[in-house]
Image 1 (tube, helix red, strand yellow):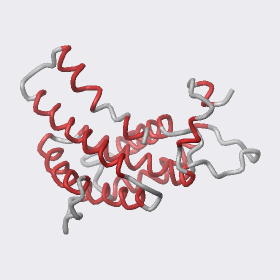
Image 2: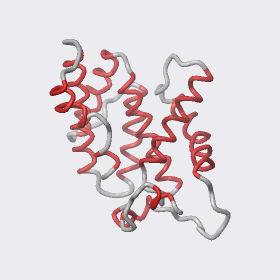
Image 3: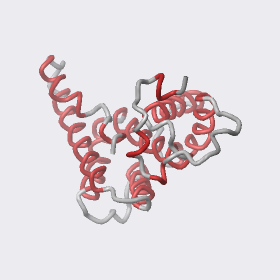
Amino acid sequence: MNRETTLGRGAGLGSCVPEELRYAGDVTAEPRTLDDRIHDLVADTQPWLVDNGLLPGLSSPAIQAKAEVICTFATLCAPSSATKRGAQLAARLTGVFFFLDDADPAVMRSTIAEMLPVLRGAPVPASPSRPAAAFFGYLDDLSAMGPTRWFKAQFAAFLEALLEEADRLALGPFSMDDYVELRHRVIFVEEYIW
């Protein structure tokens, strides 16, 4: 049973994935387990996460654990037929998301303040923070693969929702209505379905 069947995905899902992100390996050669793919992705992604300031203040074991969570999330949410490069990009975007979701509200707000104008068409700032620079590098890589207008609009809406959620959390506990209104916009789904 393949992963797509196990997860209930339709056979046609891969057809909407840009060719550059599709799995390009020989599927008849040594099959790679999900654990192998995640392990390889962690080995590639963890240094990038650290170098770009996306895992601040963590001990070495916590860095490893966080990189494993990020890469597992990215692997399970991205198409199972993604190329190695597609998996790397998914993990990098997930690292940016986890950074923003876990950051101190002031750091989150300042990083989003750098990102939103660029998503809306402004030039990249001359001296962005390391996390914002990592995201801008991600956008450059993604743009090299094709149009990004829909992704940029979805990611801008996600960032705005993070700001709304932070404002609401500052007022105290969420009501069920607050949860229904805000949470679906900050769970990072649309960014994977572009």
